[in-house]
Amino acid sequence: MTPAILFLDFDGVLHPVGVHASGVPFGKVPLLEAMLREPRCAAVRIVVSSTWREAYSLTRLRSVFAPDIRARVIDITPTLDDYDGPHARCFEIKAWLALHPEVERFVALDDMVSGFPPDWHRNVVFTDGSAGLRETDLDAVRKALGIAAR
Image 1: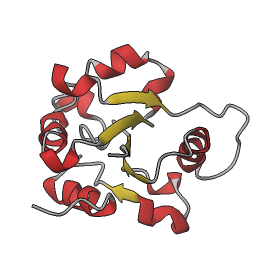
Image 2: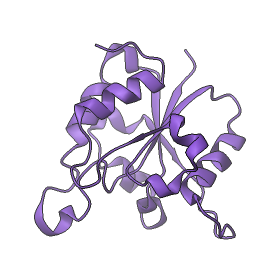
Image 3: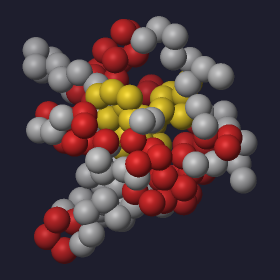
């Protein structure tokens, strides 16, 4: 089965924005991991698109996840230092996809609408950054990847 790629943001997805001051960092990880453990999601791999990739190694980013999920965190998107336009997150994802033409199914999970042009919104599931990931967001991820709903 060809892998499906989930481009994953952290802040506003795996925990609400600003959680470090008042909440549980990465408190939404168990919700995402539960989806990833579903048999129909066995082909889903994670590419970290969060700005955390600029400060932490891939090994450190993997450590956010349970041991059985870590191997499915396969890469990070490139940092495009020369890019100075709108929708930077989208262009970073496009740059990664250009290096991986074998990828046929992908979706970004992000809270930053401004990171993507309107014609890309069909490829993105936007979370409410003040709440982080919710089950309804995961339903949208499944749908975007062509994985039947529960």
